[in-house]
Length: 338
Image 1 (cartoon, one colour):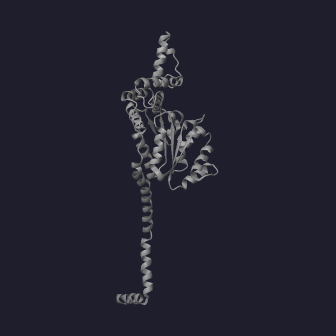
Image 2: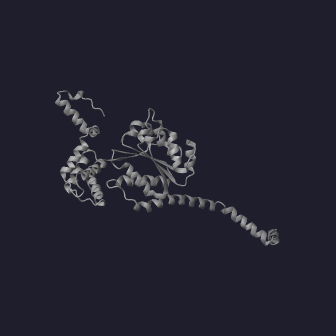
């Protein structure tokens, strides 16, 4: 009985043609390996995305030199953007600090650092009054003239192969009674597309806490505060600037005096550059400049009504107390307008 069954199987195998046997073997192989190429392809695609998102960053770091005294801030922003690109995660950032601390200049260098790895646009919010105006400006930077709408912006961003970095300078101008526009803007990377990276810049350090407290409950932005320039950083920047302009008429003591005074008053680099420029205009180009010339310009800069109005809080408190004591009034009755 067993012998008969074996003979039957052998005869059936011999009766099939070679082509049929080959087809049978190939179909069984295909059935067992059909899912493998698809998985390999998916893994290769994921790896390629991560590689494309990270390699250009490392390669371009050496091409852009950060501002003197702003190396830490430059590095922090670059790391946030690199991580958002590599992980394909939404990112919004709020950068704050006193005027003249290098916020906008640093962001320009950050955009330059990433080069063609990203798309970018910088808008000044002082000239933007509505959401439609902003969307129109963004779309013009990306694809020319399109009908401005949130849906159009979302579909355009999702169709991009690169991340789009939107730098919004003076973003505090978007504040209103409800601050809905501010809320919406910082939430765009989460609600529209993770291809969008929003970076807002303003002077107010507590803007997100004071005007946008609800952001903490949803997706709070990364925050970075630019401190005032130190006297060492100001001195180094001035030396580099005068060296590039072949200006050796200011002695080291005058330069140190300028750096120390500006750092103590505001840390505003623009004030120091203003002093250097105006001391040069006081005399003939080749005339040496010393502490007397620097003090003269500094007194003009910091004794003006506008400068007094912008005194830091602590000096204003001291002035208020001094005025109260000189007029024999109680300190508790002084009202300081901030």
